[in-house]
Each structure stands twice: as C-alpha cells, then as structure tokens.
Length: 270
Image (cartoon, rainbow, N blue to C red; front, top):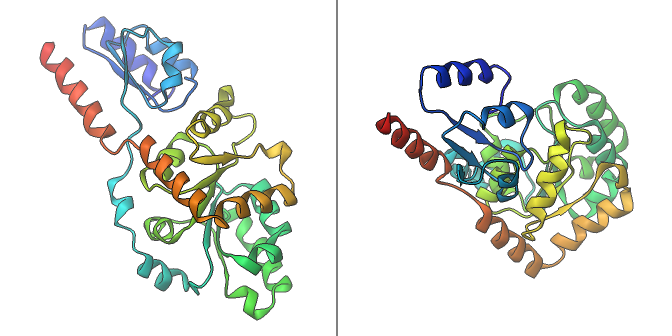
C-alpha cells in the first residue's frame, strides 16, 4: 500500500521469489510504491491516471477498497443519533480525523448564512471542538443551535451521517473520495494543500473530471464562493441527481474482492 515499512518486505519477497502485488490509492503514487513497482508482478490502482507512473503491462485498474457496511446507514437512525430537525437539506462537513482548521474557520465564518437554509453536521476534530463549541454557543440563537451539530469525530455512526446527508464537504484523500462515490453523494472537495506530491489536489481534479463534485482549492476559498457552490448543488434537483449518478459510476464496490483475486492468482502461479 506504499507505507515506508513495506519496502523491506517487498525487497525480501523479491529475493525469495515471492510474487509481489502493490496497490496505489492516489492519482499520484508515493515514492515507496514507485520503487516497489519495479519488483511487483501486479500493480493495482484506484485512479486511471496513476497508470502513467508505472509499467502499464503490470497495471490493473481495480479501484479502492471501501467498507461495505457504509451502505447500512439509516436516515431514521441519523435523525435519532444527531437529533436532526430534518426539514432542511443536511450538509455533512468532514475535515479528516484531526479536523481541518481552514474548513472549520470557513464554516464558522458563514455559519449564520448556512443555517438559514441548511442543517449542518460539522466534524471538527477533537483539538478544535471546545473552542468551536464555545463560539457557536455564544453566537447562535436557540432556533439556530437546533440546526447545527458539532462533533469532535465520528466512528461507527459515520454511516448514518452519510445516509442522512444531501451534500458532503470533505478533504480529498482517496479513502474519502471512494466512500463518497460508493454512497453516490454529491460533494464539494477541498484538497489538503501541500499533501505529499500534492496528491489530494490531483485526486480531487481527477474525480472532478467525471462531474461528481466541485473542487475548491483552499487558497481560493472565500465565504461567497463557498456559499455559492453549496447553493449551486442543493438548489437544483437536476444537479443533485446528476452528481449522484456520476459519483455512482466511479464507485468500486468490488475492489477488495478483485485485489484478493489477484493475490490468489499469483499465489497459485508460485
């Protein structure tokens, strides 16, 4: 998968003539997978554009494994767990496991405007939770507070938040993108700036080619543009349906099985 710890294992496998299969989640491979690809029998990729970085005779476009239980989410459970009002479109905003300060700041800057028309679940990261909670408590009126749901993180309940969401706003890690596609949700992607090889930016634009999302680069984010992009999607049922359909086309629900089949195939050859 490209972690630094995998390289010694790859080299040992090659020395002992054990077949090696690697998987690249991102549209631009990291250094370890570039090196490991020289020793690999098969290279599984998630984004078609990644194929140009490898020996294409070894490449198989198999997608990115996604947790199947994400489709077990329930809108009714989301309403119960998050105490949703349910009479406005729901936006789920994810900043990654640690939260994203720039996204949090943008949401807080536009919060009153957002809450006029939407219900919000903001997953802000544990380190940001206390300050944002205090700020929202001080700023919002009681009727506004009932439409704003601030959470430090989401574990198993993420599937229910996904189920209830009409729009997802997220960073552009490969895992997040393929989860959004798997669930056929319209999205706005805000890539993490300066990620390794700028892979989040490339992931976002590669996904954006299919029409399933709007990409907003962090350095270009303004409150006005943020609100306009949200309204562009949620104010038009045709756009919502099209972006959902485009997302579903990119989903790879059988990716884990296909990768496993490659493993068994090369294992039997050995």
